[in-house]
Length: 249
Image 1: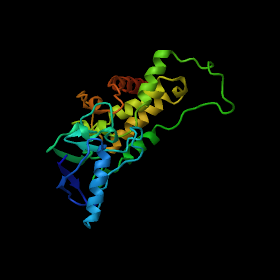
Image 2: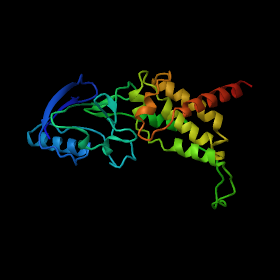
Image 3: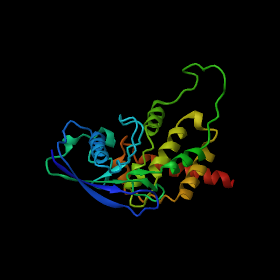
Image 4: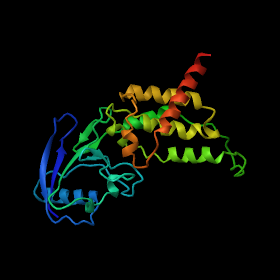
């Protein structure tokens, strides 16, 4: 295939940045999207130009590093998957593909398509720890968890922290990410001792990082590679109100 790529190029965080257009020839439908970018980078280096900078790691849809917005959609056109799981068979001869980084202010662009997502790390750190007894492992059935709670907790724990939720939200909200982390432990007895402080601290840190408020657009759920449901946002709202009231009395 022959494709036209419009790619955001930015030398460093203070650079204004711009779109550059590249013609890609001989693109195989069997290539993954990131493999196609690797080929482009090799050709740029061969021409004496800077290679394209983009985040990637596992290329198995697990790590959440491949933070690209493709034709205006975080992670591209496939639902329930990351960019590294996207293949070029989704495109046809002559297509123009626009590729840019996450567009949300708490994720500043470092270079080209790579952004700084340490804001998410600081939110996780604000959540603190869980209290658990040290020593040998307890019997598997010693702490009983209702099946519905266990499955809901596991659904929330599937979050890989990629940031697509914030990048897709018109308000730049990180509520789905924070909600998944809070909801995960709120459904388990192991998360109970620090339950109130956890939600207050994580929501406070989210606000300090500059993320916007959730107004129920549900764009976050639509682009989430792990298809985390917005019902977890309702859960974090209940947890926050519960903790705020408890802190007063």
